[in-house]
Amino acid sequence: MKSVKILGTGCAKCKQLYQLIADYKAEHQLDFELEKVEDIMDIMAYDVMGTPALVIDEKPSFVGLPSKQELAKLLNAN
Image (cartoon, rainbow, N blue to C red; front, side, top):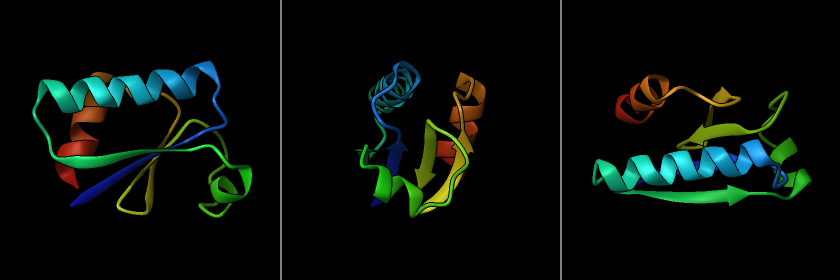
């Protein structure tokens, strides 16, 4: 099963990205595990330069807030 993680310490954009992905998942009836990673040491292990960051199957895939089109491309490509 695909794994999708949101890296962030709980900031507004981190919460917005989580909700964006949760809504997209429900709307398109996708089957993947969605998880928040908020511990700073766990976030640092992914070697990302900012948050929120999107990790798909343990691979950092996007930093910031993707558009709906970018999100669709990321979730459907992996």
